[in-house]
Image (cartoon, rainbow, N blue to C red):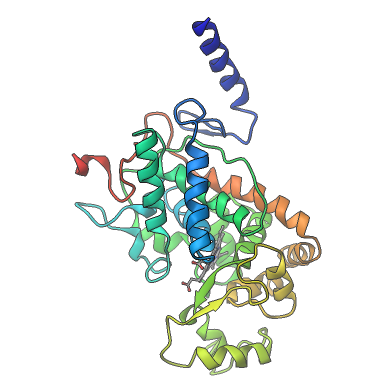
Length: 334
Ligand code: HEM
């Protein structure tokens, strides 16, 4: 009886795997039920700790969502972002996009220790990032999706890829789009995933150029609403105040909705990289308009694009490892 049940289980896993949002990596497929038997409470543990963290501070939903993005664009979704400086590892946490900016690492630590208690050496840090991103989106009012699972964790990090692959807010539209295409993502993914900026904050230093000297001629960015710009200047001066925080979506800063796209249409996208989606490319302009008009379409595309982003070069099978502590590779903990 036990044998036939486990045989059936294997059969059903094999048959489900290629169908349900799966991705062929080296050594198999990611699939949502990966931990059903090895750690059946994994998803509920992640969700409860994320919920607690977001209840403490609403912004944490945004910070956790961003961590998955900054992980996946560097060597794939392999939790390389979580490694601290140690031995030959140079942490990605100090790259230009992450320094003084990426946050939420303590929440990931808390999730990992709870999971190590429940089922030791089973759930990868890379999968924790993917689940926390989904749970954060849902808690903020956004769409839900089943997260394909089974990623393993890297044994290294890449500071240079972190600097080069993650788009900067003052990159041109073309540069940003190229960086997405290099990850296998298309224009609909770029526009929908940028919709993450419907929640969370940015520092003055991330958009100051637009307020004072957009193109090196001492003029502000005229594609930014000028009364909104004047308001931003009061707390983002020409010099100083670099770390002052501003809502990415000033209309509903902690709610995952489509106001981000409406803001862009009103010339009130905070980052240059937000506004150029409307002004520099016909296809992305159409998508911004579409998502501003139709929240449901945005949510559907966002969920699909998150699954696609989560499928970037996962480590599978015997590659990588399941870290015991997300901040270091296992060999250093022995
Ligand atoms: C399209 C290119 C993108 C650029 C240039 C960009 C750039 C930025 C910048 C500059 C910030 C503010 C950082 C700071 O000042 O500390 C930020 C915040 C954020 N980004 Fe992006 N981003 C992009 C795409 C994405 C994607 C694809 C996601 C998620 C899938 C994402 C999620 C977020 C979130 C949620 C925040 C707020 C984080 C917080 O409050 O802690 N971004 N982004």
